[in-house]
Length: 112
Length: 113
Image: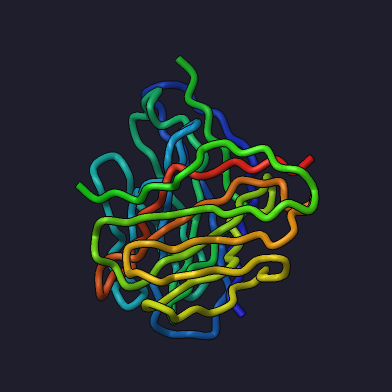
């Protein structure tokens, strides 16, 4: 079974600061993908960043980067230079065998 | 530009009614998914379809059925709506052979009275 745990239901950060969202997961598979999705208020969910489990190098997309610790089954998201538009629900997800498993989400509020 | 369209953003139905939630994607994706989103529970998979007329149960299929007669359309059916099915329903299609990235619709918020 695959499980994804996001232990921070809600977080706040000041504009221009850096924030890290935590995610741990459990899987017995060796090959899988990990994702962070963003759901802005009343808007559709979009992909933020993805990581292939076989890659040791941490993925980076502009201000978004991950800290992937495969042995610890940890996949945290770091947002640098936070912007007001980063205010959203963030979901961590694991994918393999045609299925995605999502965490419960972290609500991030960026304050001006 | 990729697009997943859900037919209704907001619905209000009565207990016992039959409810249809429609989802259409224009990306020629083979895989489509229906999720239910509830606060504190994240997204839970109801059903997914990996091809036309093919479907597979997810983690919470009870009380739901699906239909996929055409590749671009995936429907979620509540045969007899109940109040515990009040929720946000998200449709998604899967793109990319290797990455498995999901593309989501805007969601359908269903209230069952």
